[in-house]
Length: 239
Image (cartoon, rainbow, N blue to C red):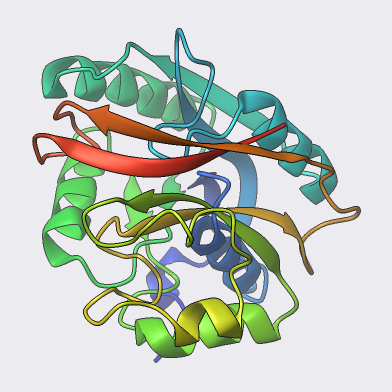
């Protein structure tokens, strides 16, 4: 499978950056593609918590990632548990700003969620931009192993408590982690089973220093990044 549609070569792009493995691996793959320039990273962060949604990673850590990678980071602040209207209004306003700067393409780390892809494409179409999915249709199990073999280092910062117990949070994302995943859990956490923070690898000029802290149990109401109600997570505090 080609990494990108050839019609998108020559694009100036921004990449949707969560700080996790799929975003990092998408950037890694895009950098192998001639003619696509990723000029900005975009992260959504809670206005009050100053953390990446669901990952619960502090904004200073994703800022450190961007410095190490060498691509400017933009932060879009969102209210806690925003409704879809608020989320879409703020996101579309940001997209229009990028478009006015000459950026034409938005890069995502999604793998195989067709409904989510269609939603992203439809939203970008409203502002005359294209979506790019460099990891699309790759088998999650193979992609997870390729990520590890490429030399990336990541820690699991959040897990769905209904599917995984607290022993998984704080673990390294490595072969041992993959080997002990519960039956039915996607190896890349594509359905929100778990989230990661990447702290070293081929994209980075220096590793990101952090200290793991306590594990915390949280319960979240529904929202645009979490359509389920009574969604509970185990998360680890990293500083």
